[in-house]
Length: 530
Ligand code: F6P
Image 1: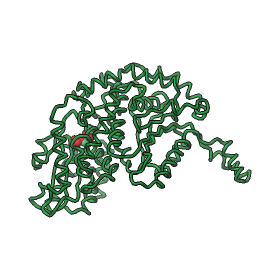
Image 2: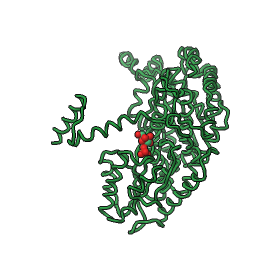
Image 3: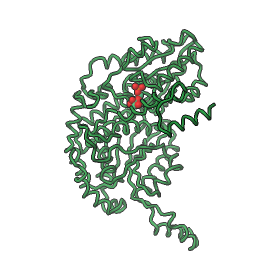
Image 4: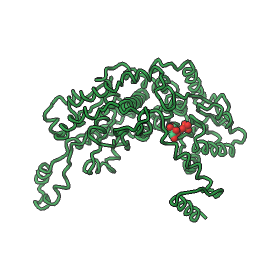
């Protein structure tokens, strides 16, 4: 791997010696210089601890890592997922690239969108009437994409209500089914492999729930999305309601495939196609825009700067948009399952830090919970804000307050409030000198805390597609720079295997050779549940 950190180090040293106030004071052009735009979509990274030479060095890093050649190789269908020996063609699902994926992509899209329209119109209905509710059973990429998009596009939903069950904890299914009428509910089992333990267990329980109400009709209430067509057939789902996808679509990149079926049932085929078009527009931008104007590349390089040059390991992703409440969780899987790796593509250890630790909650709620630490804690935590210029519901009073809060937080992080300013403000409010002395230090905001703000016009299907694809490509670019395979996920395997091994010990059918801690925990469970 090219040792890119040495190229960034002198810039990091220079910038660590200054602060964002000084950078803004010294350069009135920062906003123009450090923003990038694609139509209405704007990325403002002027509040990052960055300057022009540092940015130039970052673009050099991208060039030395051959980001453009890697992108073209992926788009051209090369087996970019090296360890699984697979192509990476999720862009083909949305027409974003002329990828060699074949006609079956369009056929499957037409087929699952036609089924979605049949459910919506009642052409495909339960015995007692149209389906009023849909439960999607899946986990990871077979859950987070659909649930995130469904919440984000709730204003577009004019079809059945959508529900999502993922956790093997029976509470999840129980709490959702408790208020639903099984005789009017359609269950979609979404699993690329159709072997995932949690999903199969929930699927069996949901089938029992349906059978309890509609008996032999239960099969009519079920559909499946999987690349394991035989597995779905064995489960008893009629082939006419099994929608496939392919091994070249990673689970966390599968929202564009039939995994989007529940969303399509909710919002309809036209809006689903608009969602795909948004992603395709971002694909075209990613493929064609020069690196210096390429939004995913810029976002990726900001991340490289934060992680590898400045040494900040975590990112708070804060949408100022209640409907993006699941966007941080979705992005967690997308980013951390893709780039949470410490082995390079050639099997050698990675010499640098890779994926950031991503977490977050919508603003303004997060302001009233963990923002205290972001403002005054001992760690610097860069923040990504996402906000729309217009609300979907036309309530401008609420929306203006939302935006004021978003921008205020970015200001507070960047510029803080010095002790001198605190003292002056307290004095202006006639605080007694002793009170100023006692509280001044506590009321200081160190500032110099970086953030990037992503703005767009409104959160509609097209824009959501662009946003998701923006993050997908950002992750790809970072994976190329870190020289890792962003499309495998071996790190989830051990836990799955051990859980299967532990089941007999918990059910009491057998006792495995266990470490003393695990044996003690199992013994305690048996004692407590006896
Ligand atoms: O455990 C990780 C994972 O393999 C994810 O990558 C995937 O999205 C999820 O499990 C679900 O897998 P499946 O769709 O095959 O049930």
